[in-house]
Length: 340
Ligand code: GTP
Ligand code: MG
Image (cartoon, rainbow, N blue to C red; front, side):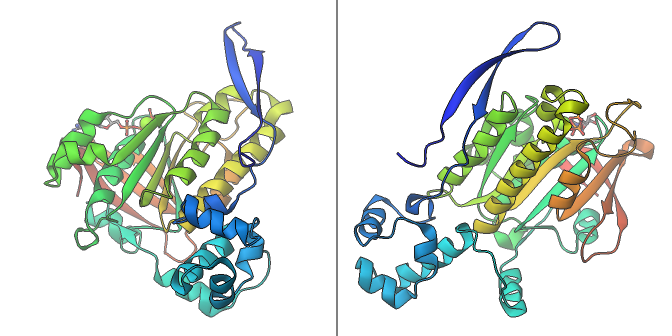
């Protein structure tokens, strides 16, 4: 199949001589008609038979002409064209009103905590990447778990009514915790766990491949939340030294772009977690700044800085938002989940 990545395995040796296998991605995968959401094998074949092998060719059609050419219904054709436009990466201008139209589709996911929701102007927005950063134990993973559970709730209850993909890089996903939080919102824990799909990422290349995996799964599953916890840990461990910094930042940049595409195409929320430096360290710079620097910050629409506060409370601070005032929200991590 043409869309399959060519990968080669290369052995590398870490400082303490522990052998790790890194899957080296040699090529950007070319998206094909099979990657369009809602296009099954039969439709894909019709498109190919009519000569539509490239997304760009589909993106520039009108629904009627595509319907005629590929013997499809006009409504189906319209949907395929819309998806192709989104995936085909067509550069160029679009009107402010079509941006507004897309913005109208934005959904908001409740954290279960009124103060945090208010800080975010009603909740965590779809079509965006939210970066949650803070030092160890500040509650980043707890926020991820809570949003995973809440995402499953119907929209009327502050959820997104869709499923969750959780990319776990530090082995900190806990089904028991999901079960507790599910009970906390009155949901059957088993039903919740069925709809949260978890993959352990073993290194940064694997982490990036898992994003393609989510893209593939999204054809059959209504993906509404993608979590990468932690976004940075593998990159930080693997790309050591100044000589590898540019390479690392480029990889993170590409990773973030692919995540943003997932958010846009699926009208989903992407939540990534990031660490701050706990002790000053020449290599990684400012101890109060999130690791990974500008690449992650620029690609994120919302950034929440978490810190521990008095009497077991935690503070979430909204940083650099495009359309919301900076501010803070106080919350607690309880047995049932995040609470005011
Ligand atoms: P790192 O991943 O180490 O950088 O930290 P993090 O920011 O992801 O922290 P995490 O979300 O794991 O927060 C851990 C804290 O959440 C703990 O110190 C507890 O205070 C709280 N916590 C975790 N699990 C529970 C639980 O089951 N009940 C309660 N009440 N609190 C919990
Ligand atoms: Mg964590």
